[in-house]
Length: 184
Ligand code: URA
Image (cartoon, rainbow, N blue to C red):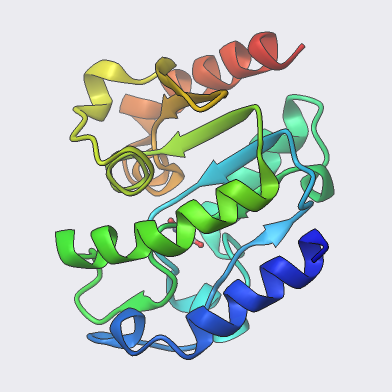
């Protein structure tokens, strides 16, 4: 089975997944980009705009993320963008159970894409991809794990940068400069 078929099978599983939908609403947001991406960006969960459109990172945080991606010389169509939680959580922040369940779908996606580098956008991304509790403010800006041939780089979630620009904007930009150096 080719990658497109494998990913659409996963999209079908997510679309039919009752556990994924529990306590959440809107369209499923499976992910977007190249299935041959060397770099995958992992967020948290869809926001309102994402749940309306079914596309990841298309709201305010998404605009920032996508501009940073382009800013380090990558094309949006060459990377893959997704999150561990595939539907908009009713309570805003996903629960540990949501993240643990979402990991199952996320891992299948990573196996298909087989990237070299995964960029974890914040705490939920790290918990989703690595089952790891991280203190993002202290640990961001570096590879926090290397597993099955994939390097995992931790940075801030763009929503945190938008909320506290004075605190995090420069840090976020510095992380992306490091990311650019890692990729080149
Ligand atoms: N925040 C995320 O983590 N993912 C999205 O798709 C949008 C906002």
